[in-house]
Length: 143
Length: 151
Image 1 (cartoon, helix red, strand yellow):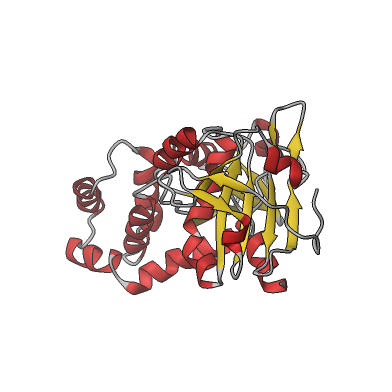
Image 2 (spheres, rainbow over the protein chains, first blue to last red):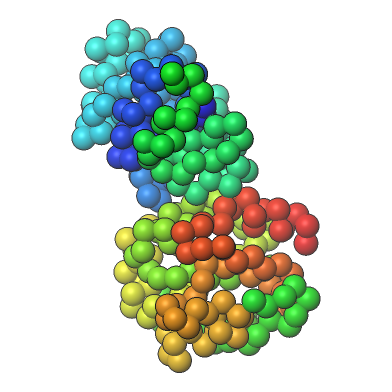
């Protein structure tokens, strides 16, 4: 299951909460729509920078879990809590490589015709919005 | 809905700043009229936000976007500012929906246009047109890129 989302999108946080812990393999891709969520791209870069230190999902969960604190000092606090090398994190999140990684996800969302966050892609079918109970019950791997 | 190959129906509408935009102003460029139901409605918001994100890529390919709805220029201005988008928004306000009707995308029983995209070539003929199957369907920006490639 591919999950397109943004760390500033409250519906994405809800979707993430519903999907976490389910027995399905998840891939998260960034779909930062900056005109709607001004810090979405900055935050996508932050999670990818954490990923370069092996802590993508930890940063992902920390961002989705508290969307009231998404400014730079809050990112640094998360880095501290996760034991990240802050200097490296700061350099990485501003790097061309990380920007390209996020832009690659964004382009793939546009190519797929996505128009909102969150959007799930399961078996080639797009499901926009927070997944409902019907969809959750039908996910592969569910008992 | 208007068919590709047709001459684009003439129009003159005010944008969000009160400037008049006419069909003749589109001559020599590829333009996409983005007909949408109403300012401030949730689905329209998502649509314009996503198009805004790919505006530089569309402009790089020589395309200019114009949003069109039955809202007034004043409503468009507020909507544009709230969304943080720079796409010009044209007011098909008075007579209400006249341009939408000319392009065959007005829904009488609802009093607004359906969600539709119309690509107008530099020669002011319609090159491509798409209408959403329901007001809840948001045409992805990929459709515009595909149409540009095919044009």
